[in-house]
Image 1: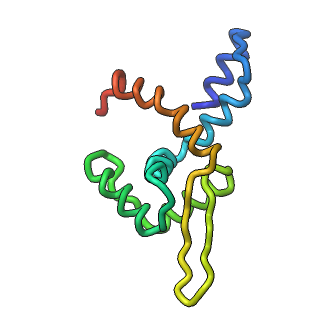
Image 2: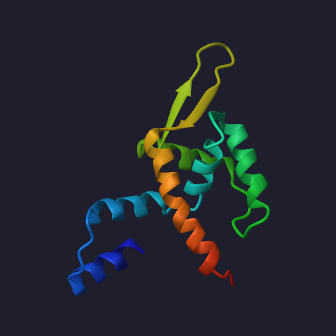
Length: 126
């Protein structure tokens, strides 16, 4: 999707302020489970199993189907690498790992809300 947008900007000469940042934001949101992950963490700091349960509860009502543990782990790692979420591991015998939104992740989720409203109005699933 972003490649097509870049092509339009180049061909038409259309210039968007902060064009590179917009493309990067789109790239961050490309993952199928990124927005559901950020939305689940908007509820507060959570553990892996709670994130998985929250996403799969809402996924039952859409075409995505259930999220697997492996795909969640990959999505968590990518979002951590991108600075959208923070991982905190406790020490001890039964060490727990917690995830929470960073200010960057919370801001991106907030910025995606108008896109979600647009999709609700114009997107008709097949």
